[in-house]
Length: 264
Image 1 (cartoon, one colour):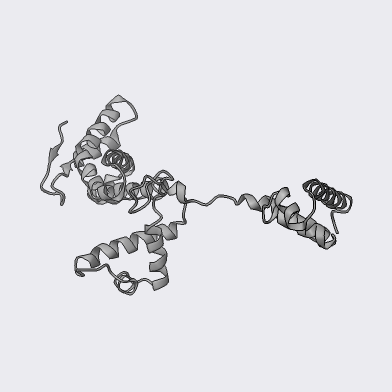
Image 2: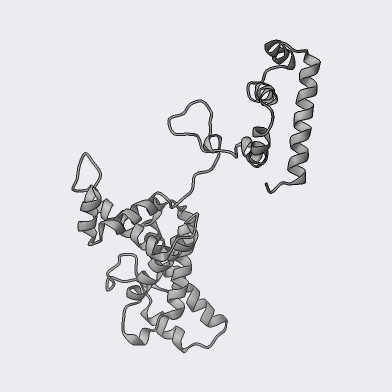
């Protein structure tokens, strides 16, 4: 049974499938029923693809959107009850649109966020698009969006933050305004190697303070001023060998004290 377009429907690409749906409800499961169902789905695919086209500018490929819309159409065909008296498109349009919106909600966010935040994002985005048609030269303010969308300013701020968080930048992405080849990953911090010595320094602090003044001065010059043993010997008027022995003796004494009684 061929399916033809009909002017009785509010959509130009809506075919007349009323008879096909009535027949579908009378057929048992089997090849004949599957064939009628497939013809109905095929007849309504142009409208499903048109609905998918409304979401093309939201970061998802059109081919993927068409597949999601087709899935929503199949669900609508399987769940539609012609006995209720409503035209099929009045049921199919919200079903297909809802399937597409669920796809964005469940699959397009890099990180999972609560549904409320997703809804705030959508309301803020729609309000911003509406206001951009009446405001020229600048973007709408938080207060303007809140008034237009009947939202609190706090909810608008949450929605604006979500707009910036829909997708995550790759660590290989170039830095904005940079032409030197540096990526976002190059700007990330790293653990300070000096953190590994914090515990050791705290452990020896009191022991170093208990050393004689000359030994403390020698250790300070060697390990903080990075002076050579020869330079230290010249500064103190003693031999380099004596400086070496003093450093070794002081370090061994402090090490033994820490190992013997680390808690004090």
